[in-house]
Length: 319
Image (cartoon, rainbow, N blue to C red; front, side, top):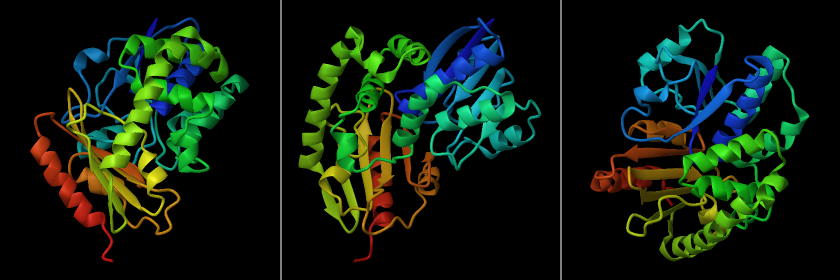
């Protein structure tokens, strides 16, 4: 018996969701099942490939819905959970009882744990720390920007590894470790430490780059990283330097996409007045009310700059 889990790649909540679903599935659905993992990333157009659903059962956690007939389980908590209206109707007409959406949940990990307990009687206290940190990280429930940017806890250091690791097989090892070991134990391993040190160096280099490039204007911080080789960054860095900002809009580029990231400051003195997911959806992206993104083809850099300018004009305050 093989279970394939597609999870939100390079995301602490996505990895945590995969680990929690694995432990639940092997305890309550198919003990001894072989579990394989595939990271899934937001990209222009369809987010899935047909050959990804190669299990006897297939699950998606912390990512958009797919109407493929081979999809058995689905858990998501994003407002922008559907690529199309047809996908949403497919979900609403599903009678399997194994596909779940809760846009009010701060993290998908917490949502899976709650459904597993309420509907299947599964609860594992060894997962409590992981669930708590996934809730803090994905819900942006930090004490301050410094807590996230300075990465002093084991969970936040592991988050840095998960967000920066390019090898999906190594991330799969992390997921399996999360089903059996504490965050401290995982972080202490030589394999993690070998990866963490250079990632922390890159993190602080990115912090300095954003400090140099970020511009604040009427409630919005903006910067362009497309010529730096930086394809991802700690989303709380702008608030670390500009606590007065309400929003941040950035442009970055990886080997497969041009990305506009849009966020809002949880500690902003002037509160958020826009639903970011709704703004991003207009450009083919999505997310949550407080954070979202738009993924374009890599070659669509000029289009990304145009969209970014339009989003900035919409978010900036009048005075």
